[in-house]
Length: 138
Image (cartoon, rainbow, N blue to C red; front, side):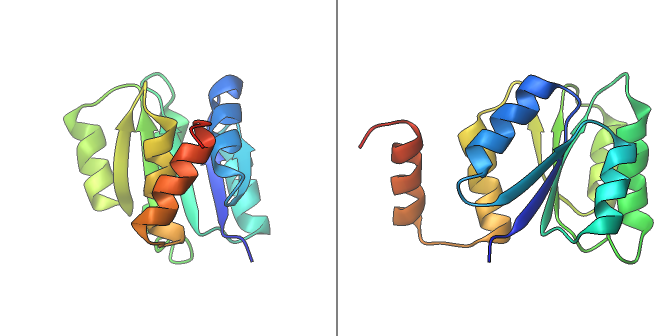
């Protein structure tokens, strides 16, 4: 059975790219905001969450705090994609179950590697083969 990944990204194009890169290996749900994310989290269980935090959008920061405080959700690993870096964000990520932070713009293949490491540990030759396949090098 495929591992499930929830991606919270308000930019439709970036959400499409993330879903395209990850969907060959994972079941990916992309939602545009924290409210839809909470709805998804009450309906289904996820193995990993990708959370896009933008400077002007405080809802996603509040969602990160909720993920930290919820007894049902606090053990789900979170990968943060952010358009800024400051001490508040780093502190919130350290206190939460954030395993990695990507600063926009980022390499989608590195995101794929991070999600593979969290959800589906495989040997490195398989990861290299998958990267080559995505890049059409085979």
